[in-house]
Length: 210
Image (cartoon, rainbow, N blue to C red):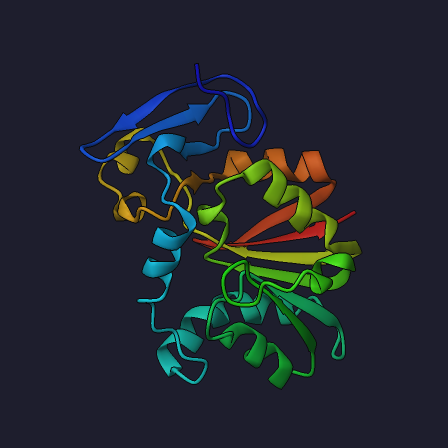
């Protein structure tokens, strides 16, 4: 019997296709891919290496601005931030530095230095990362702990709408996507870690630590 990788509650079958089974938690509503289908670290990195997100790409910057703009409205110039899961081309950090912020970087594959995880920040960004959490309980614990009281966590991830939409959802077909969140999941996370939250775009959420 599987249990939820976020809250350890019982899960039920949610969807199956030719490649994977997916389960949904009745408590936190996380939809998770069968752990037996997770790639190993080398397979995961091989797929990330194909991504070509350059810091100076105007289209990629437009995509990221949907998180950057609402976040900049919340934090003071000169604030210290961390881009968690920055990838090989940290465009988001570059945009925030240009706006007057001090940025640190962390990524388990491309900037795997433990020191940035030893302190807290005025804000933390996490774009297109949480869907890759193989161990979401640990990862969310780490992420929440990096934000100072009163600070902000900016998350970008596509959200589960319902079972029918999930069945035809291209987002689930990426084998590195293993943890799928919904609004109900973010409500659970906010309660668990002491945040208030708001959805500012289809796939952008801002959480403030109380």
